[in-house]
Length: 492
Image 1 (cartoon, rainbow, N blue to C red):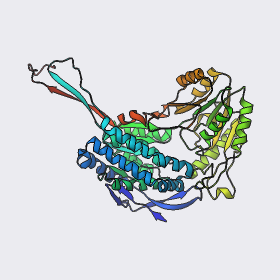
Image 2 (cartoon, one colour):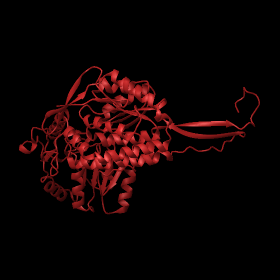
Image 3 (tube, helix red, strand yellow):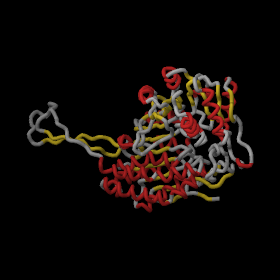
């Protein structure tokens, strides 16, 4: 069994407590590697290394152009090793090789984009109201960043945090989920090859109470960027707020996927299936609430079922597999529990609704693609994040009814509208309470497009030019030109 080591200050090292824990393959249900079990001592070593790199090392004296060149080199190395890293992610989180390979092939673009943006961050001169002064602003790195990532897309979501942080001149300590740490540890090895100074990027692994909390609360950490559940995000935000740290939070979702009667039915059916089943429902932007206009409800559901029944469960390493296992045992149990809750509330399972069993499922944690009809928006299945392959179909009458239902939830990460009426598309996009609204598509993301949530779905934005601002702080500089004198006790 492979035993991983930490990456701190540019070195591979063992956890100071001498402990490791096993990570499991969700398809086989068996352990395949050992991950370092860090504690506060390892966290302190990592943060101290990041702080030295930020304030004393070569990184602190590099120009933004030099930082950008290193980032582009890193992007090249990720592209070179994309296949290996994708296979590690599949082994660790059970998502489809087609999706993970696609993500790894795309991740270099974040480092190319922000590498190019690094030396485009400009201050400005200020036309002051006070004569005799010259003033300007400059943007400086916020400091050491704690990047805490989830188990569903470890490297993609790390790139969303890491690339703008590096472009801003910050240093980073990453804490991946204890369920999916292997790919981040392998990824960290590329930094040395790319030529980054020691301490710029460090990785600590382990459990929330033992490694996560000490990282959030470390006095030398200036910013915490977290992706995960809203419950955990609240706790982390409260911890950080007590110490006046900057935070970015990308949290849960219960996204409405709204299909109007004038939609291209075939396109919308495939969009609905992609929105919920393509990632086994394990994505914060899952289109878990399918709102269908009542005039086409029955026809649409019939076609939806016909396509969904063809979904192939199986080995996520097999390119022909369409639905893989749930990543973790606790999440597997949670999804099955929600299926029971939905039935108890009166929803009807017209597809699936049980464990995935059979030779194609190996010994893994599979849940059949599940579709519930007769769902009312007040049901728990329609209000709470399931994070699994479970779709709730809800009828609506007209635009106002669709908006009422779509917005009647505490989350606001994403939404979609399927219509051929451009006026309706614009009206809905203006009034849907979500950070991203897609029209006639679903799950499209880009390094150029800001991403984040309304309401309980989080704070701040990742991706695009907007993201780099979260890793910068503004300084005002005043220069007396020599013309100002007088009483030193009077504010000028």
